[in-house]
Each structure stands twice: as structure tokens, then as C-alpha cells.
Length: 285
Ligand code: GUN
Image (cartoon, rainbow, N blue to C red; front, side):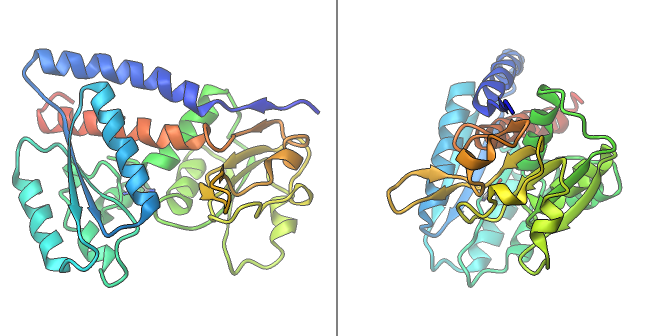
């Protein structure tokens, strides 16, 4: 069976072009979108993601301010910083890069963010709005995945979507988004029994577990749409996803590569959310 490669890098580049024009338009009105990013600790992957975000902001004319904080910093200091950013009218979006150092309480930190500046959509307010079918900011990776499915005109309604992973960053919000589009959704996780029997029933299989080759060809139905959300670095420094791409592509109808699939969409959606936050705060939407 021949498969279609879902080119996230290309779709993201089109979206970014539109955002760039929108940013120019805002700037011509004297409005300068600005994203604040808080990076605590020295997680190598997080540093890389944050530098991608910084670079993309620069490309699109969005100002970014990165707060690099040491691993051992007191949680109170982050609360104070978020308070300041919440009250600073020149800051439009606030993003706390996850994971946070282990001694910190992620929930207490995230819920400090002003929901109107919550460009990641991780505050209880934004996640609650998503749950009641009235979203404000939608988390970037799930939002990007839905955009990819739509860009390739992949049917969602009435399909069986299986989401492997239940994180706040991907699994839970993605399940809600698929449900909103009338998919029948099954959420699996590390304690799921008989995973293979479930994934084999998926018309759309979305995987976010962070383990290379976690999904093998025997776990996939012929003709399935495969969305690989994993970003793993092998011992040889190669970036790979969570699915065994080479063997699965023969069975798939559509499949995302890693890199170049979901990853670029996450960043494009963050830029989109930042521009939306700016317009919201300026009363333009
Ligand atoms: N860590 C991995 N993905 C993300 C994301 O989308 N946002 C934040 N804040 N942290 C992450």
C-alpha cells in the first residue's frame, strides 16, 4: 500500500507566512507582540525547544524574552516572576517550559499564569474551557495535530482515534479535540492492558509516550493514519519518534515523519496563540 507522508514542516511554513503578515500589520498599528518564556533548570531537550521558539519568534517579528533560571531556584521566585509578567502590559504571552525541576509544584506554577496570556493553554482555566467546548487557548501540539489532519483532509468524524499517552501537554487535550470533532476516542497509557489489541483497531493512531519504536507494525491496522508525537534522541544522536517508521509506513495511509511532522506545527501554533493573545489583550478580537 502506498502512503502519504504528512509534511508538517511545509504546512507550518505556510501558517508562519500568514502569521508574519499579521505581525507586520499589528506593528504598523504600534502593537508589538511579545512572548515571555521561563526556562528553569538545565534540561538539554528543553533548551533546544526554547531556542527553536526564540528563533521562530525572531523570524516572524515577534519579540521574545527568555528567563533562564537555575535548577535550584526557589519556586517562590517563579511565582513572583509570573506575577510581574502578568501585570506587564508589554508582555502578551507567558510560557513555562516543561518539565520543571523536580522539587517544583507544576500545578501551583501554571495556575499563576493570567489565562489571557496562557499561550500554552495549560492553566486550569484554559483546560476547563476546552473541556466545556468553549476553548480560549488550545495547547500547541494537539492544536497542531488537528491542523495537520485538516490540511490533508483526513476524516475524523465517526473514525476510531486511539491516543497513546495521557499528558496535559498532548494526550488529554488531544483526546478532547478529537472528541469535539466526533471521533470515537480511546485513551491508552502505561497501565493499559492489551494495548496491541486496541491500537490495531485505530483508524487514527496518535502516539505520545517518549519511547523509540514503542509502536511496531503488528500494532497497526492496514490503512491507519499514524501521528507520531515522540521526539527521542538515540545514543547516536539521531532524532526519532515513538513509532517504528520504516516498518509501519507500508501499512499506513498517512504518517508523520520525525523530525518534520508534528514538531514544527507545535511552534507554529505557539506563534499563532501569541498573536491571538496580543489581539485579545488589545481588544481586536
Ligand atoms: N515541553 C514539551 N512540550 C511542551 C510545550 O508544548 N509547552 C511547554 N511549555 N513545555 C513543553
